[in-house]
Image (cartoon, rainbow, N blue to C red; front, side, top):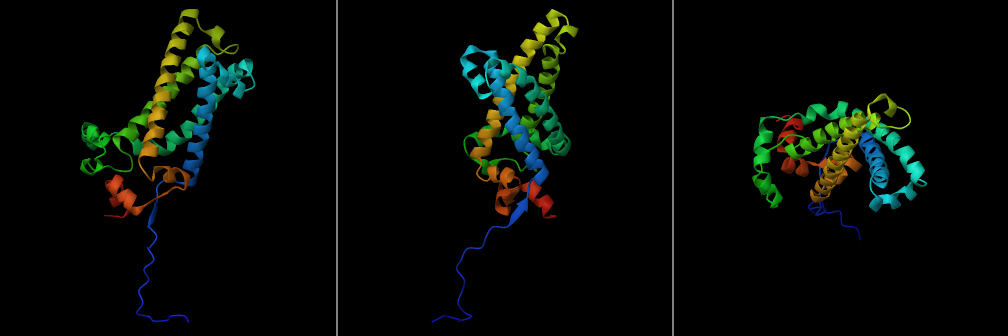
Length: 219
């Protein structure tokens, strides 16, 4: 017999209220850049040091890894340029970011409740963004300088040697930056959903990015 008593309280939990964090085109651009980054990083490591040489088999052998690597780099840089145009305003460092960085050791101990309130991105996320942007510019310029057989002959040998060193340094910084980015995304529960579905719960936004939550709520 079905109970139609209107006084009966529905005890089912209410679904969380979701808010939009990243639009579809931004997420698609992000994952495109991520895929090409891994192709560029693995092919670059394969030709950089014998320890990573087995990576060449992911690209059809050593010759193909060497041929494809610069093209991966160019495509990755162009893809990131789209992200840069869409997100640079959100990543401008502000007065509150200095306080956030000063309190960062507290966050590393797992106590986020005492961190200064932040907007859509905290100072750590902004540093990742600008580090990636600067590294990609350095990688593109230096890579062109010793890209055989297309452009290398236009530059003196000493310049090419310096370019190789700077290229390796920028690549190392970028790889470490992306590792940090991935670790932070996995560490903060709910961050992966922001880049897969584009939304986060209102509670997540209010706790991790209170100034951004107040902005989108018009408070």
